[in-house]
Image 1 (cartoon, rainbow, N blue to C red):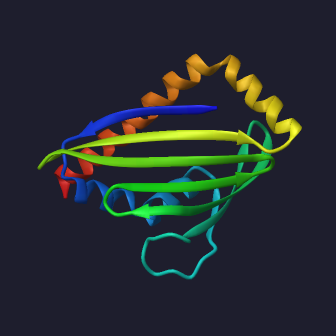
Image 2: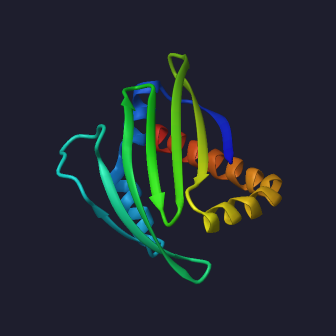
Length: 154
């Protein structure tokens, strides 16, 4: 099951990519929302192999996720692989320079079930795909707006 959307940001592609690579900010944001986040690599610079282990509560259950950057093509693309109980999710973030100060962000979220219970979960998500797509597009638009605001205020 795949969700995808695109948003334009009033900022140069290099600045947008740099903000998207500020993983420490994303770690702190997840921790503020109650997640436990732990880096599991020893890398000092962003790149392929950067990885995390995260745990959080979702719908009354404790969920654990392992995340790893599998593609890092500066300043064009970042792909993060997320593994959890029975699910494999690929989060793809592609950047395209539209002009000197305008960048298009194309984000996709591809969920693949690895076992029967995950397949049932994905099947139930398909029933709500319209509303989930709407929420996904809204969140990506908010993210793009936050990047734009960070660039203007920097």
